Length: 189
Image (cartoon, rainbow, N blue to C red):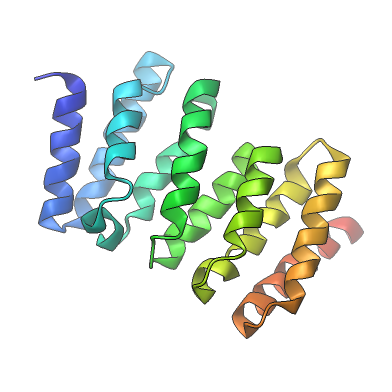
């Protein structure tokens, strides 16, 4: 059995069992492999992407822990892997009902990517039907404002963030307000 098949089998069995506590050892093993190889194994990325839209994975409590692999090992992903990952994260974002998964994805988009592609993805995600999903988009825009080295992109992200103050949802407006408050505190501090 190839390493990819072995990892995918382990991941699939974990999803089928519904035992989210098994995610942490799996995430640890991926991290150890990345440390050994000084690179993110393509077979692991392929396996994770193959389950990212699986209803069982989406329902799995703490599924967000698997997504954090990308934050923890960002520097070990190749540009090609990052390019493959971004649209998959954007697509999966609308499928999650777990707020923490959406929070992690918006953080990855805003902080790790922090570029034009991520900005465009967040602009599309702010139109999500589900209130919970829209309410976590400001988190991504906030990260772009604080982490990009492109002042024009930071200004556009700030404009999108402030524009979300007009959202129909009180929860979305509250998240926008909190993001703006943190940005103002950073500026004055």
